[in-house]
Amino acid sequence: MAVIQFIKGIDETVIPDIQLTRSRDGSTGTATFRFINPQILEVSMEKQGDITGMYLLDEEGELVTRDVNAKFINGKPQAIESVYVIKNPESWDRFMRFMERYANDNNLAFKKANK
Image 1 (cartoon, one colour):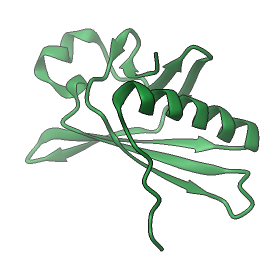
Image 2 (spheres, one colour; image 1 turned 60 degrees about the vertical axis):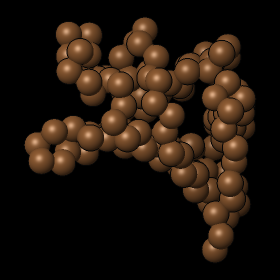
Image 3 (spheres, rainbow, N blue to C red; image 1 turned 60 degrees about the horizontal axis):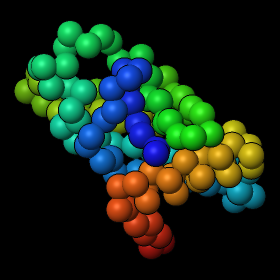
């Protein structure tokens, strides 16, 4: 089972929009996750603790980024944007294995962007 968490132990139920970029040689890239009205920003979650990062968890272990930002509209948090930086080909392969599991668990499909 592949899950995303912002606070350890609490799975985020909102499915993000994810955009991938990759360097020309394929060795590095970024994955930008955008969660609209994520569960973790609900008032009932305030007592659960602070968001310390975005944790991508599956049977292989954990991928972590600390690049997590809330987007506010009229003073209220509406979205979370998080960027996971992929630094080498092994990390790219590992990230894609997580994404395949996450996509399968959540009935998601990959759509290539038109240039």
